[in-house]
Image (cartoon, rainbow, N blue to C red; front, side, top):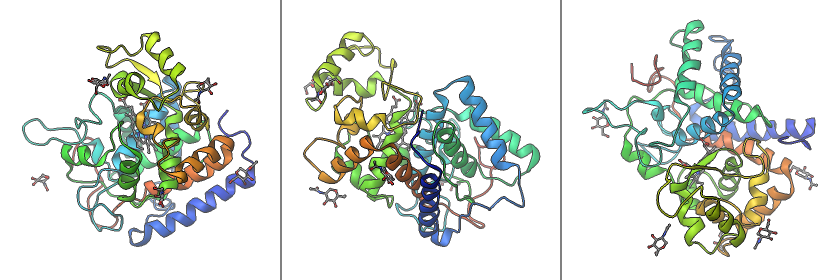
Length: 340
Ligand code: HEM
Ligand SMILES: *[C@@H]1O[C@H](CO)[C@@H](O)[C@H](O)[C@H]1NC(C)=O
Ligand SMILES: *[C@@H]1O[C@H](CO)[C@@H](O)[C@H](O)[C@H]1NC(C)=O
Ligand SMILES: *[C@@H]1O[C@H](CO)[C@@H](O)[C@H](O)[C@H]1NC(C)=O
Ligand SMILES: *[C@@H]1O[C@H](CO)[C@@H](O)[C@H](O)[C@H]1NC(C)=O
Ligand SMILES: *[C@@H]1O[C@H](CO)[C@@H](O)[C@H](O)[C@H]1NC(C)=O
């Protein structure tokens, strides 16, 4: 399962690439893997145990936590580029609960409401971390480690640079403005990712996260009923299966990748080549005639699981370095759901 062809040396070279990119991307923010070595030596084991327990209870939870991290990192309130000196990007802003009448955060924004999940897993890990390392580890770093472990449990790994601070503010509007919609065109996807300092390679590899997890009928209905850039027999099967009727059933779930929806493999890219994916935004990466660059990357990852594993690891480190803050900016939240 996962990445059977990953030899140890390839796996190590993935880590080396990730570390090099991390130091290039981190720049002034000075995230570093050893940030808590002295102050919270049990951190990585605690997070790993918490994620493992959650995934054992429900295999889909690994996918949900991975997505939670993506939705945290992509929401920039202050500036669209990394290198800012304030908490932003990967800042645990997504974890803040709304305060009715006072504060409308990201959780109930369009892309997140009734969709994003895993908050209680992060809460439970945070409580365990607080028990041994009081007021030390940011929620943003716990989420970054949890996302890595969620993938690592079924596939390859990478080293997570640490030292992020937690945001003291955010908004639903920022989430609506920053997260790409499921009907996004390739041009929109490329420009959204470029706005975060991520290129076509990052976009294509990170989209491979859709090799795990589930999507609701509401977000893939138009693709299976209305699009021509879809495998006709695949669309017909889905329509006939009743999982996504033309009207109603908005919350019904289907796996984003059909063969092995909980395995972190390269199946998603093979499905893109045969046009058997759920989201219009996914299919936009391949075969639309729009961009040879993403077409070539999809073919490469479809043919070579290790190539995908290596680039995905590096891209996760880059995504995890979107405008984090260090030093005295922001705070280390005591409870991930509210500011101190
Ligand atoms: C490229 C632009 C992207 C778009 C338009 C997009 C869109 C979506 C949508 C619409 C869903 C289903 C949500 C629902 O039905 O409620 C979904 C699920 C998911 N996305 Fe993405 N996504 C993108 C990129 C990413 C990235 C970069 C990651 C992580 C690195 C990611 C990880 C996931 C995962 C793991 C799920 C399944 C979650 C679960 O089962 O709980 N996505 N995405
Ligand atoms: C939080 O952001 C909102 C709107 O973006 C702003 O009105 C409010 O003053 C901010 N609160 C703090 C504490 O910065
Ligand atoms: C399909 O497209 C038609 C015409 O644009 C539109 O009226 C209809 O609502 C769409 N149906 C779905 C399921 O997206
Ligand atoms: C549609 O899916 C079938 C079954 O996987 C495959 O044999 C066929 O080549 C696909 N069609 C296209 C246009 O990719
Ligand atoms: C495809 O995307 C790449 C990366 O963004 C870009 O350099 C290239 O010019 C694009 N090609 C076309 C035909 O749009
Ligand atoms: C698969 O990708 C890895 C990593 O990029 C590369 O070293 C290896 O040679 C590739 N394997 C094949 C069969 O092309």
